Structures are given as C-alpha cells and as structure tokens.
Amino acid sequence: MEEKQKKGLAGWWLEKWGNYSKAHPKAAKWIYQIFYFWVFSMSVTIFQYLAFTFLPYLFGIGLAGTEFMWPQIPVHIAGFDYKWNILGYEVAKNTAGEVVIGGGLGYFISYELGTFLAQCINFPLQRNITFKSHGKISWQVMWYFIAWVLISLVCNGVNGLWMPVAQAYFAPAVYNLLVTFITGGVSMIIYFFVFKIIFPEGEAAKKA
Image (cartoon, rainbow, N blue to C red; front, side, top):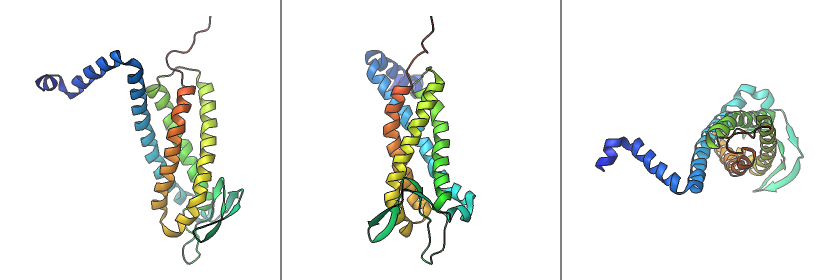
C-alpha cells in the first residue's frame, strides 16, 4: 500500500500493466483493444442519441410529415397495422392525428446523418488508438463505409419492426434510447470484428 502511494495510482497501475503485458502479450492486447473500443463506441453512441433526438427538429415538421419508406411490407403487431421498412420510417402522429417531429423523412435523414457522423469520429480513434493501424487508409475507409451501409440497413430493418408501436406510447426522447441501444449494440458487436480485419496492426508493408 505504501509503495502504491509513493508511485501514485497511475504509476502503480502502469507498472502492473507493463508486467502483465510482458507475461501475457496476446491477452493484454485483446484487453487493451476491447477497453478502448468500448470507450470510443460508447462515446459515439451518446453522440448518436443526441443526433436522433435533436436533428429531426432542425429538419422541421415539413420533412417529418413527408413519407419515405421502402419496401412497405404490411405488418400487424400488438393491435397496430403499419408498414415495415428497411429504408425510412413512418410519419409520427399524436392522438389527434397531427404530424409530430420524430418520424418520416426528417427522422430517416437524422438517423443516417447521425450514424454517419458518429463513424467519422469513431474511425480515426479506433484506427489510430485502439488498433494502432498504419494500413492503407483508402482501402480501410472503403470497407468501413461498406460495413456502415450494411449495418445501417440491418438496424433500420430491426427498428422498423417496433418503432411504429413505440411512437404511439412514448415521446421521441424515450424511444430514441431504444433506437440508440439497438443501433449501438449491433454496431459494436459487428464493428469490432470488422476492425480486426480492416485495421492490420503495426507499420504498413514497405514496397521493395
């Protein structure tokens, strides 16, 4: 305990971590990557929640009342009849039948813009700090973008199953927590393994 106080908590921890890293390099690398991956992912998840909640107000009631949906497959769940979509969300209305912020084209644009900007923040942090990669950045950006598009479509499809029901009972700030949880949870699981593939560690291979 006295030794810890002399070195300070940070110094004591760095020494312990350094010893563990030398003894178990592979396990230490995974722990390091998972920790920073989680920290950065949670940070952009909070950013996404703010985007999902407040961006629709910037786009206004006009876009909120504009229907934009595909493929519009009829669904009946919990006494509600609505259309399931991979792209777009149904227009949200209050009990009086008036259009409210939180659905339609405005929400769809907010969702896609929020997740895209979040990944613009996440990409350099994960590449440079979590995985310390110096691979070809153009190749990495391309595959990262492809992964974002596919993950976004999956999350849109999942959200399209329950959001119309949630909109009838909860305010946008509440159901956006579920949107953020589903989007962030699915993204974190998939992205970690995507990063392990597209972010080779160490220096880029030198040409002869």
